[in-house]
Length: 237
View (cartoon, rainbow, N blue to C red):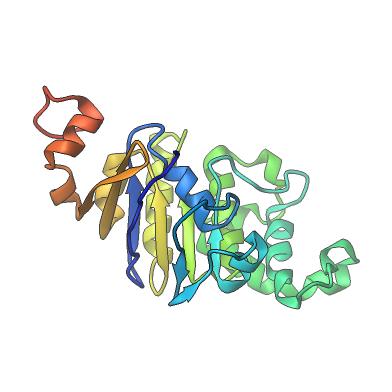
């Protein structure tokens, strides 16, 4: 089983990290929470309501919005156009983004503000395909923010980035966290230690440990899962 008996709570207003070795079940948990996969057992509750049987679109409408490991932006559209599409979601099922500019122009000011929030104010008119990898991730965060998420799920937000891009994304997450709840899958433990209020460690589809970074980084089971039994800590990973 990909995940089995995984049980954890996410505190409102916190950054909660889901970590573990490759194949631990982290992304599977994201897919279960957002219903890209249907659970075969168990219950998922969001703000006190059972959402286990809902479809992915219903989950998003409730305010649980995710990013993906591979940047999911429209490459042929500009950064501004990408964010406008997300903002147009507020109009419901009219699909106005397939219509003329007149409808979408009403979102320009708000879209520009979101791009400024993620440090892309100089790239408003840049096609997304021409953005660097780190800036594409920032654009994806802007489109996620445009959906006004109550719970923001970030799947490996710094994966494959240069050190400079990692620092930029970490600073961005710190900036946007105020008043938001974030669940984050992340392999970079220095990012996890600097951002997370609480951590759940998975291994082979089960919860191995939970707590703050100081607690889990010294847990013998976590150390063995990451490094093997000959190591005494994971602080330098």
